[in-house]
Length: 126
Image: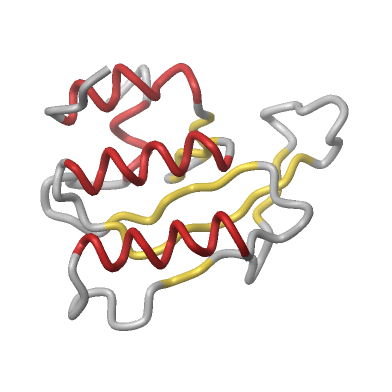
């Protein structure tokens, strides 16, 4: 699927992730795809957080914890290009992900997405 609008992006990922408060969680593989699509849409991503299931066998989406200090924030994210930020985050996900990380939430900071990123993926947007 070619991503040319935010609506295309939402359609592609909505059923693949988990909305948890203000975060949208995806497997590392899908998080990398989303990162690429956000870069294509010129949306600035400044970091990512890592999450784990409390029970890796059950994989209950209601029993997920953030791995405190397990993510990455791009230093100088606003002086770097969108592409540079994406490369730093991609490198972290591919090479430095904590062993117990099951899911990733990307941290955007771009006026094209007003409000929390997860808002785009919620069924009820009230």
